[in-house]
Length: 174
Image 1 (cartoon, rainbow, N blue to C red):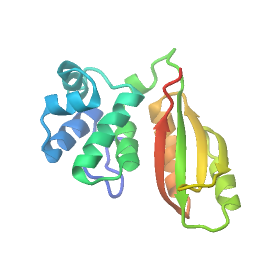
Image 2: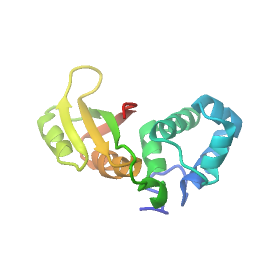
Image 3: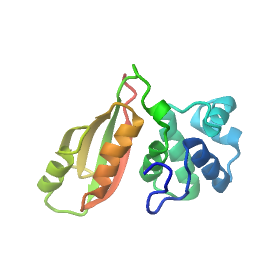
Image 4: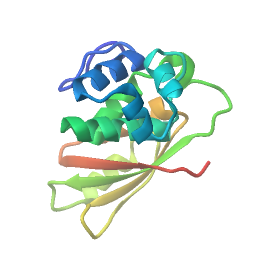
């Protein structure tokens, strides 16, 4: 729920900017260092942290990955937590292309048929297929914005029994 930390959340923040500031402080990284690693200007990072503007889905992913690595956190969970803090104003901008992602799912289940059917029923999921390799399923999902993708798809996948871990890859194709 917006304004409340999710269970197991590494921080309790009401806004994306507040969450980014808290995580940046806890990570021990300087703001300009975080901006450099993420690939944005120091001014952009400052704007994100002060709520002046919000990062794109790709930049938010890079921020989450950088902070998660430096703090020993799960990147997908941190990205989902940060995405859930996007303001309604930013999350609902008209005319923005949908955010599309491929989600690699690791499962503790031997029979993946039930799992892929459960995931395929989630809003925003375009397809869910068992795969061979280091992951068990690949999910193609789309949200009208990052917040929808996080709330409808990623949170939904993590609530399903048998899901151990996910790795989310944001599509850069618009």
